Image 1 (cartoon, rainbow, N blue to C red):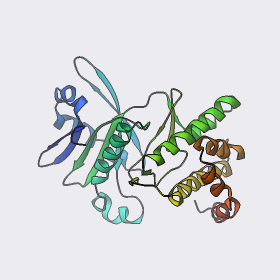
Image 2: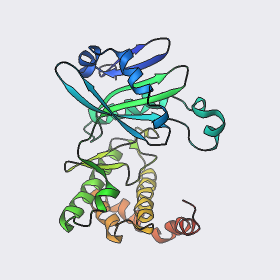
Image 3: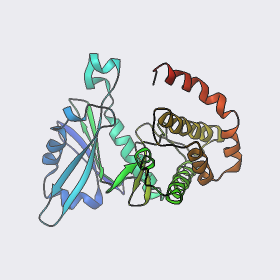
Image 4: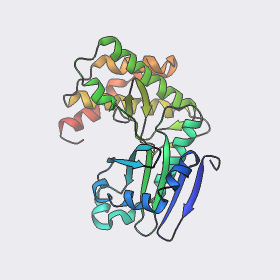
Length: 265
């Protein structure tokens, strides 16, 4: 990845920046960019929270997205962000860059930042314009049946592409599949693992995870149909793995449905 990123550091921060954006952003100053990003750290506390970052040079205007990395749950209440490994931003940046280099539809990485003292990380990517996550997209009741099915099949195909490239997305759900100007993207790779060879059992578990996501969204009133997951699988296209996913599907979903009924999400 040394051919993609340039690494810079100071006493307060460390960052990597994509070479193609280096000259333009250098005109603003990287210290200024770090300060712009870090000043919004309070608003980026919520897990998965994304904020807009607009940067202008004399020649260009950029629309970026900033993702903050913070530890959620019990430990965050005691230790705050000191418990999180800020290297997660760098890890996600490298996986995204690797995926893009190999033809995967992912957001373009601009930079990743690590605040040394505060142990906070940030990922900056190019904004996906006119975008909705797959759940929001499917919730549009004016959506035609043909476009719905086409988008679901395309989503399944890109997940197959991701698996074939050896990426295991550990947080795969319909909120992490983005529809943007009729293109499909995958996002949120901070828990992803890059493997040389992704085994069938890993693929099936990943596909069952997204099945649970479809079912959960439908259970809580989202406009998801029973047939949507099967349209998604048809796009994935591997008959052996599809049959594996269908076999015992009802039983694998049962404990989750019980948990949802009990209010455990």
